[in-house]
Image (cartoon, rainbow, N blue to C red; front, top):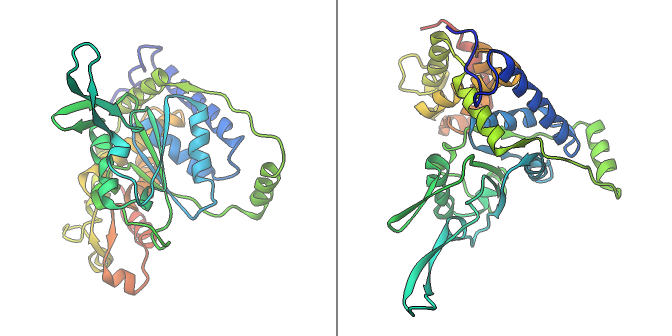
Length: 341
């Protein structure tokens, strides 16, 4: 195994690109900390999906700074931005765009002209994505997976980099729709926000009830972000680390020969191979952002909950006995040790 990953974008060799990435991460954390109080783990995970080139789904009750975090990240990134507020009456064409008939002033002939929707941006903020029916949610499938939009017989590529940062409220709330499995699977991470501590909440109130607004400045542009994403993919992961990630995902499937008794009892569907890919990619991003030259077992375990929590579907037994996905994942990660077969 090579000890030094290839350079990012050809600027520097050896550890220099890794050190640059670690410094860029700290700069982003510092900028985001000016607007968002606490939520450090949430911020770290959002940055990992950014560095890995993935999409992020942030879940939590209203008022926990989900939208503020995404908006603040936009201010710290020098990237084209768009916002979509998902509502029950939103149509797919309101997201992707549509073709309209336009008359040529010279010839008088009519022609179809494509009007791009808000998804044509490098950073798309999808607010309350589960407030709209599945038909409209499905409009995001092609954009998130293939980075393109197909209207009729024509395909329009999306800009690069392209990231969707979606927020959603808990599905128990009135007026929400469960994300279809295919849609949820496009998100690299599902990140949960939690209530702040009392000290953090006092600081939130102090900072938001005055006249002063935090000043933020861009830290990374699109070219630098693409360099980071190439660097993350170039980072090595050993065969043992990849095998550990694949085994962990395989054990979420009740029909897998290595599945434990509690998985067979409480899980309806396990995670797909896309979860294995995101586990390894997330582990690489975590290692690189911390200034390390290769991903290890600890990196895989550290991102496992974010990768798996929206891909493992509990069955009726789990709901009846109030066994949560978090409980299942905690037990599964603890029981799956490196080197097992």
